[in-house]
Amino acid sequence: MDTGNPYPTLVVTKYMGSKKAILPFVADELTRLTEPGDITVDLMAGTHTIGYAMKQRCRIVSNDIQRYSLVIGHTLLNYNPQPQFEGALREAFKRYYRINGRHLEELFEPGLRREKVMLSRDTDERPDWEDYRDFCEGHPYFMRSTDATDWPEEYLLLFKPQRIAAYRAFNKLEPYSLFSLYYANSYLGVRQCIELDSLRYAIDKLCDEWILDNGDLGLDPFGLRCLLLSGLIAVLNRINPGPGHWAAFQRVSQHNRDYLVAQRRIPLYELFLTKVAGLESALSKNPSPYAPHITMNEDFVAFMREVYEYIKQAKVVYLDPPYSQGHYSRFYHLIETLVLYDYPEIAYTGRYRTGRHQSPFAHKDKVAGAVGQVCQTAREAGVVLVVSYSRGGVVPDCEAFRGILEGHYPSEKIEFRQLSSVHSKLGQAKRMRTEEYLFTCRP
Ligand SMILES: C[S@@+](CC[C@H](N)C(=O)[O-])C[C@H]1O[C@@H](n2cnc3c(N)ncnc32)[C@H](O)[C@@H]1O
Image (cartoon, rainbow, N blue to C red; front, side, top):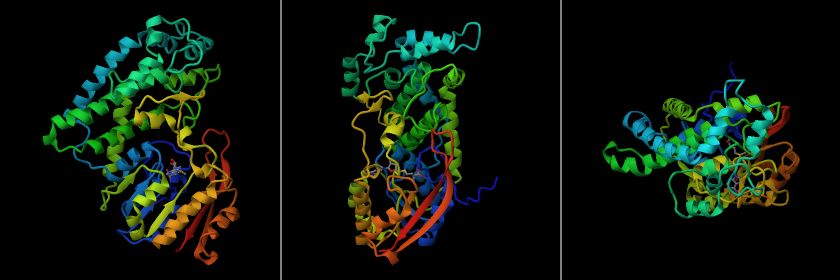
């Protein structure tokens, strides 16, 4: 089907507010404002839809507060096709994966054994949905506020706070077991957590140790780490039974049991290889003449200060802020933890990281000030500012948003475009009609 989109896209994970669905609306404007080789600054790049679409034309300087975004951005913008993830590299990876996996299989044997029955394909053997619900809800996890009963004492000891404190203090303690200790039977299954932890372990071992021991191969550890972590994010996205974020996990019910079971049967190792190969294949077809591009991971204010010299040389600063009151740090906490792998404190039913970033763009009383900071920097630097926004956000409509911009630009310096679109509104059954806005502000 011809979607009328001439720009390349590559989706690592579904993302709220991704510009994929309205890419030409934004990218045509950025193309109109730039010449080949010009700098475009992407202040809040998310999944780097814009950088990926524009990297053939522009030098990209991108940023986002979330660490997973840096990983995705470095992969999408700076992937280097040589050498690919195969041969000796892949063999070493598999060895590491098995070492961690074997260790975890022993430790988490009670959970694994019960899960095997719950996920059985033999319908005579498989317990009914209420048993599966009880199994999931009765499973221990770190910081569980009620006692998990009916489990061997030594199994329960694994999840004790003192033990997790040691993991947190001694970075990279083995075996890697964060997901097994925090999320088994919530967002993914027990075996899947073991596989994910072991894939994460193999990525670190390969990039921290194996590459150094094999320096003659000339591999870039950071580039490889970002590629493999992007593959792992894509795996989590694929097995997510939810709607494209991780704000909540589904309780087992009669209605969703078969679906959850099917999702939790998916083996992750092969899926991971497929995802990495898919990324490599797509990325090799979209190289950039201007690589390496700059990708950063800062609050937008610190970022603008740090790269101010680039901003002065840039043709466009593009701002695509959060529109809604929900924080990205909540919706995407699971992939943030996958990347940071730092054994965080967690809270609430969704087991979110505590101390998550709270964006001013998600607060009614802070959003105008935050937009103003971007406007002031862009004006001082003498660069065009392009802003995306959507109807029904924290700033409710285009008049209100225009009002904020007019506090910083004369009205005749602001151009306005609008596009009717259908939002998938991740998590809501109905797709919603909305209006997408694009403001172009000249200094
Ligand atoms: C609408 S999304 C961007 C989507 C992106 N254009 C895409 O297509 O994937 C908004 C982004 O703003 C980031 N963000 C929120 N507050 C921020 C801050 N204070 N500094 C930097 N980035 C921030 C979020 O992490 C999120 O990725």
